[in-house]
Length: 487
Image 1 (tube, rainbow, N blue to C red):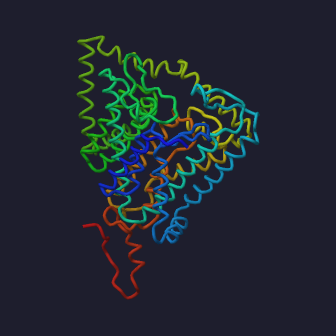
Image 2: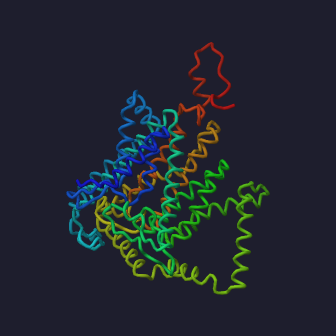
Image 3: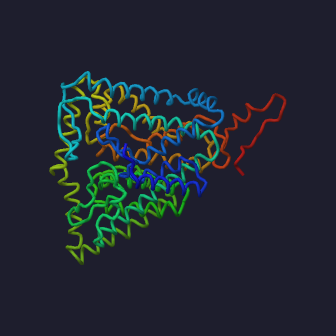
C-alpha cells in the first residue's frame, strides 16, 4: 500500500482539532466525510483502490466502541432490544457471500460496467470477478459495523451531542471548501483544492456548464458536491425548524446558495423532491390557521424574492438568459445529452442483469449503475433489496412509538439526522452507482432506533423513561414522579 502524505496530514489535523475540543471519535469520523476525494493511500493489489480517509476514523470508532468496559453487556442489550442489529449482521454476511460467489456463479452470463485501469473510464464487459468486489464489500461491512458501534456508544453519555457537533463540523467544512473552490475558479487561480484530491478517481473539477463554473468542493465532481450539499441542507433546515438555531439557519442558507451554484442536475432535482414535504407542511399549517413563526419567515422571504425576480425580468429582459440556459442544459436536455444517455444505458443493462441472474444479483462491486435502487436490485438481488427496504422503513418511521419521553433537543438531533439520511438516498437514487447507502445512513438509523427502544443514560440531552425509573424502585419505596434532566 502506498500511503498518501496529504491524507495522513488531514487525518492528523482532524484528530488534533477533535482532541483540542475534547470531542469523541464520532465527530472526527463525520468531519472526515467532507473530504470526498482524499485517500489515505492506494492499494495496488486491489486494482489501485484508494480508501478515503474516513475509513481510518471508521476503524478507530469501532475499536473505541469495543474497548469500553461492559462491552458484552451493552452488546447484549443492543441485540435484545434492537432487531435491526440482527438484520444488519445478516445483510453483511449475505453481501459478503454474494460478492464472492455471484460473479463466479454467473460469469459471462450477463454484462457489467467496470472501471478501466488505464483510461479511468467505465467500459462494458462480460460479468467476471473484479477487485471492486473486495473493496466495495469492505466499505459495506465497515458501514454495518459502524451502525453497531454507534448503537453501543449511544448507551453512554455525551455521544449524541458529539454526533450533532460532527454533523455541523462536516457541513461547515463542506461549505468552506465549496466557497474556496468557487473563488479559486472565479479569480483564475484554477483548482486550488487539487492537492487534497488524492483518490484514484477521474477528477472532473475544471468544468464549466453554460458559462457557469461547476463547484466540486473537496469532491471529484460537481454531482457529488451537490448531493452532499442537499443532505446538509436537509439537516440544517430540520434542526433550525426544531430549535431556531441561528447557526443552523446561516449554514443552511450558505449550503442553499452553493447548491444553486453547483450546476448539478442531481442537486436541482433532489432539491425539488425534498421541497415537496416542506411545501405540503406549510400549506397544511396555512390552511388550518396555525402557521408557525419559522414557516411564516420562509413565506415572508419568498414573496420579496419572487417580486424582485419579476421586476428584474421586466426591466432587463435578457438578465436571466444565462440561468435559463443553465437550467435547459442541466435539466431539460440532460437526458438527451451524451452523459444522460450513457447513464440511462447503465441503468437499463443493470436491470437486465437482475433478470439474467434470476433475481439473485451479480454481487456487490461487480458493476455500476446510475441509481441507488437499480444498483440494489442489480448487485444485491431481490433478497438484499428487501432487507435494505426493511431498514429504510425503520428509518422513515423515526421516533414514532417513543411517546413524550424524549428531550426536545434529542428529538431535534434525531429527526435532523434522519432528514439528512433520507436526502442522501434521494440524491443516490438520482446518481449513485453503488447499493451501499454508507455511514450517512447507518448513523441516523442507530440514533433513531436507540432513542426509540433503549433507555439512554445521558441526562445532558436525553430523558430516561418514567417506566424504567419505576421498575428500578424497590417495593415499598416511593416511586419517582419526575424525570432527571428536565426542569
